[in-house]
Image 1 (cartoon, rainbow, N blue to C red):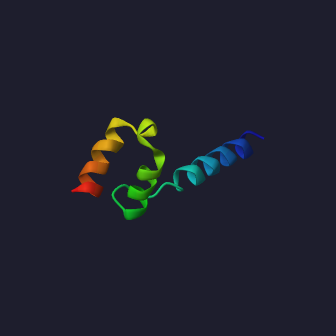
Image 2 (cartoon, rainbow, N blue to C red):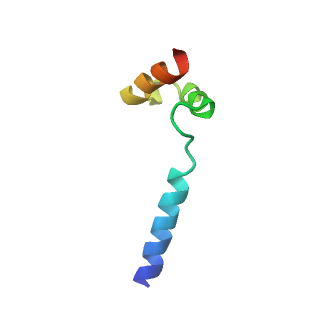
Image 3 (cartoon, helix red, strand yellow):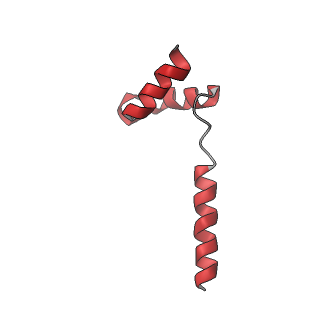
Length: 54
């Protein structure tokens, strides 16, 4: 039972983290634009300025 739960948890984590596009790609820039100002972190803002604006 424990092994099944562990495997399910790892699989879910992998699937959830694999859904976000790689930073700096056009898809990532589009995702950040759609997030809205209030939902973007300072780090994401800096990376957006570096990769999508300049």
